[in-house]
Image (tube, rainbow, N blue to C red; front, side, top):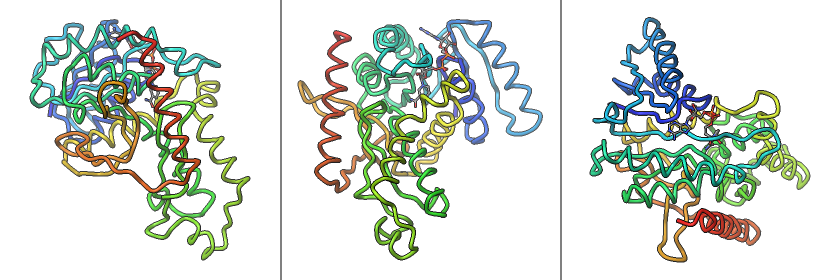
Length: 311
Ligand code: NAD
């Protein structure tokens, strides 16, 4: 499969490496408005073909080069500087998405292409990309809270002494400060979280839960403070998402897609079945009153911010 990545900064180049290492792409096109940067990234990653997965990596500064791509990953745009929130990027990155999407759509097969949105503020960018592309919502997929859910699963797994692969727990809502840790539907293996804690005598007190939530919510800020940007975690999330699409795995992933119309239109992360057709089904887990209210708050924040870009 041919895959294009638009925006080859810290995130785009880590995504290119992670996608290459899935072994599922035969060609990856790297596009950046900075042609020198895209060419250098393609050279560097291309050399890794001698070690594993001989994938054709090309650089492009012309959108015609993405013709034939079935998945287009958008990771272009400003990133957070230390102390900035994702919403501080709103106007700048709305302009970037408005620049990119029409050019992408002129060069891909609209009947088949899947857009994967990574640019922040994620949910608002998904709404904008879906509107501009006119693609069905199922095929404009934001990585959403995949990364937040991964952070939760890893932190929780260390507390409970099990593999993160056995932790089924979601962060839902906005990929941003209002994201919601959904404790109620969490299971370890197929055992409810509280039952698991009782049986293994590893109590999760309210304090521990609050600390875990805090760590999930502040992870990006901590990483940005330490290394200027985040890229490894999101690259893992994108590769996982791409794998589920290409292999038609129908995995349940917390991605962000548009639902509703008119005043109810919003993109938000919920558990969704992701396969060859994109995010084809949406699931609503059981949540308590506080979690449900948190989700509604997230929706309102995303809608309000979408309103601010005037589209
Ligand atoms: P970066 O500054 O390192 O790279 C951005 C790249 O985009 C640059 O190479 C730039 O030349 C390119 N670009 C900008 N405007 C463009 C345009 N109109 N057309 C083509 N290319 C363009 O930034 P980064 O650290 O790679 O972050 C990229 C985006 O990913 C940011 O919005 C960041 O917030 C987001 N991000 C999202 C998640 C997530 O979980 N969704 C995680 C990390 C980062």
